[in-house]
Length: 235
Image 1 (cartoon, one colour):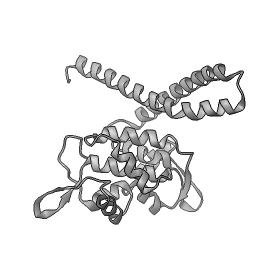
Image 2: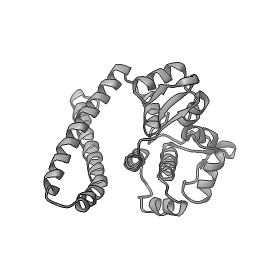
Image 3: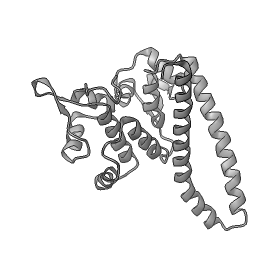
């Protein structure tokens, strides 16, 4: 797996597999200017990097939200051209947060395709422990599509399963606490207003709150990790 600073190493077939799309789809997005061109390596083979993968996943997420190709083009044009894979992943997280709960029942081969790579039995067990997939009848799986890509990436994180599950519990606990306090605050603001005002406030505040939470958490985590690395002498 590459980092944001590493040279592009993925062929178009590998990029398509990682993103769970077809090579034809990758070429189509490239022809529309939605994906930057690959770097041309030895033997004139195009190589793609993490930014290409993150941008491709963002495009796919925008499509799942029902955006037209023209709307996606407008959305991407508004983004800074030099966004890193990390920044693109944040954008995708914001977009995905608007999606309704999407659980589908898929076969094992389809699960591999949606994951963007073959999954070993141990991988599926770890995804089940993270509550991303659940065994269903006939050898199929119920899959939370909103969490699948995140869960697959966590398979490569050098943390124990126990640590990942503990981290999930921390995130769920504090997210629910923050949501409860914010909901109470907003209820106080609209307690004497009509139903239309309540719905209007909810519609406006939902994206703003999610964006604020993501941004605030991202900055706080960066500061905490920076202090830890500096204190441990590895920064």
